[in-house]
Length: 92
Image 1 (spheres, rainbow, N blue to C red):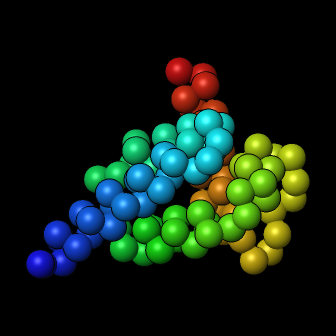
Image 2: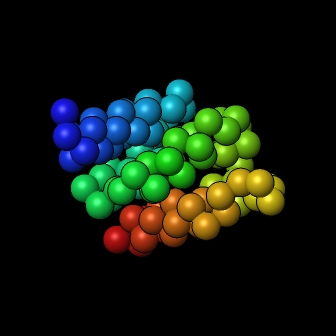
Image 3: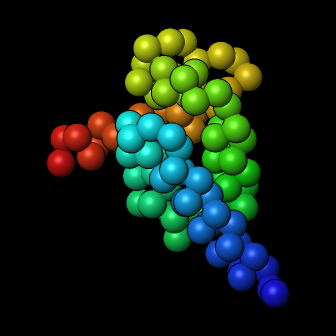
C-alpha cells in the first residue's frame, strides 16, 4: 500500500465517522463539511478532524452551534470553518 492509498483510506474512514455521529444534526454539520472537502483533505487536516471528533458530542455540537464558548484546548479555527461551511450551505 502506498501513501496515496493510505491517505484515501483515512479520508473514507473520517468521512464515515463524520456522517455517523449519533445525531442527525451532527451528521449534517460535520459530515457535510467533510464530504464537501474530502478530496482536498491532507494528513494534517485528517488529524485535526479526528481529534475534534474525539471530543464529547454534546460539547462539540454546542461549540459549532455557538451555544457555548469554545475552550482554549479545542480547535477553534476548525470549528469556525465547520460553522462557516454550514452558514454557506444554509444561504445557498
